[in-house]
Length: 367
Length: 170
Image 1 (cartoon, rainbow over the protein chains, first blue to last red):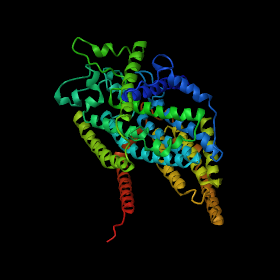
Image 2 (cartoon, rainbow over the protein chains, first blue to last red):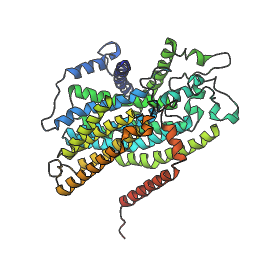
Image 3 (tube, rainbow over the protein chains, first blue to last red):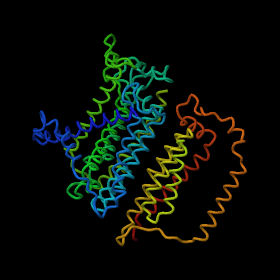
Image 4 (cartoon, rainbow over the protein chains, first blue to last red):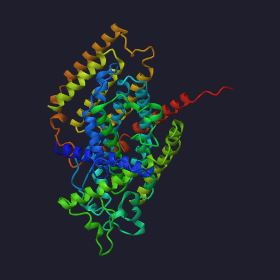
C-alpha cells in the first residue's frame, strides 16, 4: 500500500515536470518563450493546468455508451500504472520484486490496448473510433520489435527479474543473492582478460557488456515512441485529421486521467529502457584505480545514501531519454501509415530478429 | 479467501458473457474472466502460466475479437447482437458435459489422492519463479511436443500470409 502511494506520488511529480518540459522544449525549439506568466519562468503552468482540468465539468455525451465511456480511462491508467509495480527504483526499493517482471510488464501493457478500444468505441464518435483503431494497430505491431529487443537483453542477462538485471550492470553485482561469484568482463568476453566487476560504471552497462545491444536499444526506443503514440508516430492523434484521436470526447477529470496515462506510458517505457540497456540505477562513473568514483557515487545499499544515489541516477537517465522523446517530436514530421508499417515490419522486425540471434551467440562467448 | 473472490468474479463475468446479447459487452466481460483466471493461476504458484495467459489471450486473442466486432458492427447503425440457434442441441450437450465432469470429479476423490496430501505450500522452494523449471522441462522431457507446436504455428503463419496475399490477375 505504501509502495502504491509512493509510486503514484512520484509519477504525478514526474508527469507534471514532464508536461512543463514538453511546453518549454517545444517553445525553445521553435524560438519562442513558452509559458512565462505562472510562477518563475512559468514553472507553475502545468500545476495550474491540472487544477483547471479538475474543476471542469465532466461531460458524458448523450449518445455514448455510458458504462464503457466511464470505465475506459480507469482501465487505461490502471494498465499503465500496474507496469510500475515491477520497476526497481533503487538497489533495495522495488514495489513488487517478482521473478518474471519483464514478462509481466510486457503482458500488462497489452491491457492498455483493450482500454483504448473501449474508449474509442464508447465515445460513439468517428474520430475517436478511427483514432483508437489506428492507435491499437500501431501498438500491437510495434510490440513485436520492442519485445524482440527486450528478449535479446533477457538472453544476455539470463534473467526476467528487473532487479537482477539491474544488479548485473554495476559494481554491486556480487551483492545480489545468487550472483555472488559472477564476474563482469569488458564487452562480456572473458578472453579479453579485462575484469570489470570492480570497475563498474558505464563499462558494465548492458550496452557496453554486449555492444550489439546498442542496436537493440535504438530499436526499442523507436518502437516505444510508437507505442506511446509520440511523434513521429502520432497518426492516432493527428490533430489535422482526427482532432485528438481516441480521447476527443473526454473532458475534465477523465481527460486528466487519460493525459496522465499517456505521459505515464512515456515515463514507463523510458524507465524500462534505462533499466534494460543503460545501467538501471547504477552510476555511469567507473572506478579508476585509486579514484573510486563508482563506489562513491553508489552509496551504501540499505542506507539513505544508496537510496538517494540509486534514485538520482535512475531518474536522471530517465529524464535524458524523456528529453530525447520531446526533442524528436519537434524534429521529425509525422510518418504516413504505409511508412509506419514499412518501418515496423520490413526494417525493425528483421533487424530485431537478427539481434536476437546474435545475442544468443554473444551469450555463448560470454560463458 | 482471495480464491473465492476471483472465482466468483470469473464465474459471474463468464455468465454475463454468455447471457448478454451485445457482442461487445461479451468481449469485455471475457477480459474480466481472463483476468480473474490469471489471478487464480498466481494463487496456484503458476506465475508464468498466468502472465502467458495475459499475453496470449488478453494481448492477442481478445484484441483480435474486439477488432473484429468493432469493424463489423454498426453496419446498419446498430450494434451487433447475438442470436440463439440450436437451442436443443446446445442444452443437451452442455448438460451431458456437466454430468460427465461432475461424475469424474466426484469419483476422483481429490482429498484422498497421495500427491495432494503430501503437497507443500512452499512449492517454489529456493526458486524465484517457475520459469527455469519450465524451460528445462521444455528442452528435455517435452521437446517433441514443443517442436511440433512451433511447427504448427509456423504453418498457421504461412497460411495466413498466403491468404492475405492479393491474387495476381493473369
